[in-house]
Image (cartoon, rainbow, N blue to C red; front, side):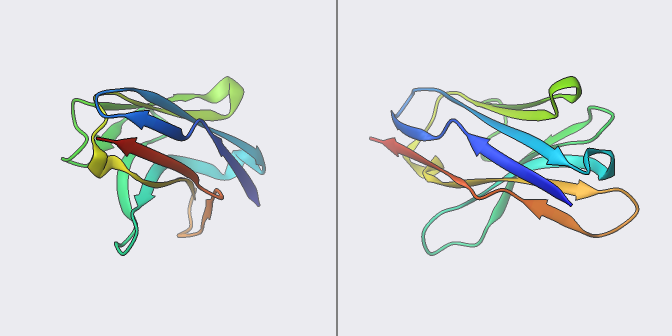
Length: 117
């Protein structure tokens, strides 16, 4: 199993920045792609950004050019740099790790991001 621990959420004014971190532990060798999802009240969980083991990235259209996902394999950590934050970015952000050769994956406990207008 892989355990994921997120940090870095908080309250920020519109236009501000935050950086989320997700540290993976346990069966690290099983991890292929990692990503960030978010869930706002009353809405479904949605993909924000993902990065493969080879470094390829993809983003939701709503965050392109504002958010950047990166990965430090030596530290077993994935980051989400969020700039130009908007009130509609308010949500609980979850880290996700997808395993190789299987559809299984792990989730972190989530970190709250609140953007005030």
